[in-house]
Image 1 (cartoon, helix red, strand yellow):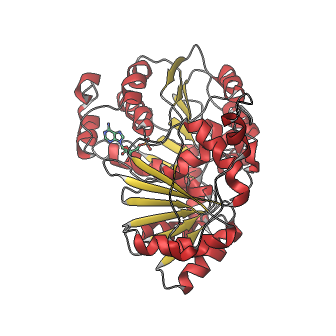
Image 2 (cartoon, rainbow, N blue to C red):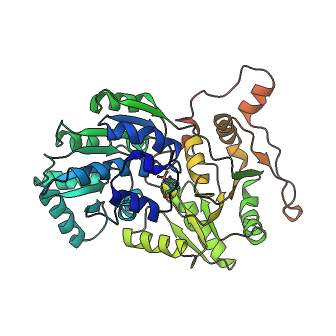
Image 3 (spheres, rainbow, N blue to C red):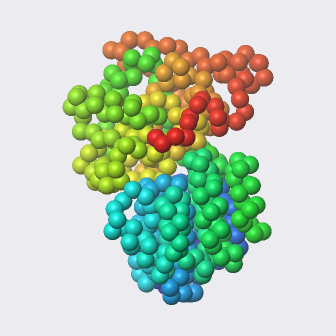
Length: 412
Ligand code: AMP
């Protein structure tokens, strides 16, 4: 479907053209018309599907038609600062040819920002993107004015609940006009999301795009290794594998720090990102990475969602992520837009069961590559659930992936 079929206002069309979009993606095709008709939406769609523009475009179109001075038009609530910043940039791009105003409200930045945020919340802005914690800080100060709010968007709602933001979200919603239109986006649809949806959505249109599966164009492979083989294998892969931007994931920040130190010592131009870094440091690391100045970045799962850098052509999981969703989100950082990418996972001895559960979720066996001869032989791949399934013991392993493998939701 072409964008001119949606009847967007000229300023919005110009933003779409300048962004280089020609045809609507499936999620855009399905959610834009009902949003324009005023319906609430519950959509399962992951990052990479074009979901951000799917809600931004119709919301911005309405706000242009129905701009109200001194009021907040749309509030987009998201789980992380990184996603807030990214959506704010998306808004800037798409609204460039309009007079719409917007601001991102997230924790960890300086007092000057707080003043600008306060002003927007008191005096109005067309679009506000916020993280729950920071929004609550403002609400607690008593000046937030959301009376005229036309749209509430909850993006990555499952992630927000996983991160413990349920109460914050409810508190935010209590401050909003009941007359608003509400749009909920989530990569997965567990029961707790449905419960939240029943509380906040009115007769929603349900759209299902999520196939919790990575795009086919990502080449996935894995190495089965003993733990001490991981570092030499990393060094080997980074030397042998050409890349523009490579992103390495570790589940724990201690591992990120150690691995970064080790690889730096071997001469790699490398940076690290995790929750110990201040916001300004994170932003400068990300900008050095996206500009190519530092081509190699080691990160915790804090980056596994939302970050949208088109030049990432290699993702390496130094360890197996906590669950299938994290895996999909980690490897989804590569092969963005039109490009292709490779995703390599190092499976330690104790991680085999976890990885086989991920394979089950993907309904795909990931190719196990042979270790380079210099590293000697690795262990064979014998995950418990996998063996059980092949031996005909009724499938083996758990059905759900959440809670499996101990992928904690603490600050990473
Ligand atoms: P998202 O799923 O919102 O994270 O979007 C993923 C990427 O797709 C972003 O880089 C968007 O700018 C891009 N994108 C969104 N909609 C379209 C479209 N209709 N055509 C081409 N690219 C798009």
